[in-house]
Image (cartoon, rainbow, N blue to C red; front, side):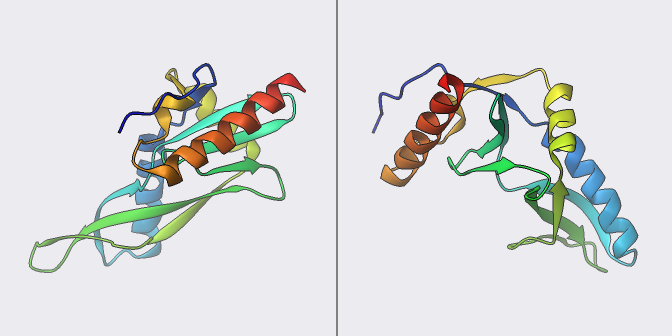
Amino acid sequence: MEHNRERGVILRRLDTEALGRQALAHLKVMAPTVDWTAASFQYGYAVAQTDNGLYVVCTEGVGWEVTHSKPLILDVIASWKDADGLAHHSMSPSAAVYLSPYEVTELMNASTEDIDLADLVREFGDRLEVNFSIWHDRLTAKAKS
């Protein structure tokens, strides 16, 4: 089912590949006996910076305001090999990355890819459409105020 979403709310994608490499290096230090092979994130993320704040929205249409007292928390999904060389992938987060507004802004500035909110949020059912509408309204209201 295709939805006619309002367009025009442009965000900047976060480069989670570089962040994943940092998370992998951290996992290797914290658990050096594990053969960690990758660290990634469950969703894609994009940032909107307005006069009223810094906001991050994921591909599920869930979002957060990022402040010094409320850092962005991203769950890390890890992969590793066991002693027999068999690959494994975590079903739940293996770690978390906490990002301050400064760090989110740095990641945003390092990226060159803009994306419309309408394209960022997946399309699959009413829950995602409601999430999209909430963030579309919130970000357009923040831009107008």
